[in-house]
Structures are given as C-alpha cells and as structure tokens.
Image (cartoon, rainbow, N blue to C red):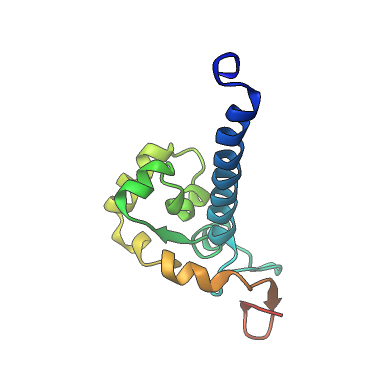
Length: 129
C-alpha cells in the first residue's frame, strides 16, 4: 500500500485506527479492575477465588461487541481459571448462572469509573480524589 498510496496516506489511515484501538483496549482492561465495588485484600484472609470473582468485573456488552473483544468482559471467569480459553468463557457463564451476577458492570455504569483511583480501606471501595 505504501508503494501505491505513499507512506503518508497509509500512516493517516493506520495511525488513527491503531490509536483508537489501543485506547479502547486500555479502557477495557481498566474497567475490568478499577470499579467501585472491587475487592482488594491484604490480610491472611485473602482468597484466590474471592479475589478472582470480586476483584475483576463481569463487563456486560452487546453480543457482537463481546465477540469482537474475545469475551474480555468475562474477565472474572478468566481470573478464576486462566486456563479456560476465551471461546469457552460464555459456556462457563451459561453453566453457572451465579457468575452472571458477580461484579456486574454495564457499559453505561463503566463510564462512572473514570475518576476512581484511590482505595478507601474504611468503606472498602474505590473512590475518586
């Protein structure tokens, strides 16, 4: 393409696309871990299972977006068992309906997570400055 259209034309098409895709990917990763009711534990009471299911969100997306993102919204199941391939995460969710109610976050609700950056140990929630 660079030989036919020139490097500037290719860069004008590729760079904005790569920038937007990187931003979206960063956002998806951010909201999987930085939501108000996340779970952080430093005590001997720490449990891998509780941290997996409560410390990462179930990011509910429309089916097409879920497919395009490789089921990234089912991140809590991935944390529960990282050996489950992404194409099997939905089957796990379907097999155990309780997984669908844990740390549930919609796209609209995720926009409220933008300012969350501090852990409040008293309230056990992420809060804004």
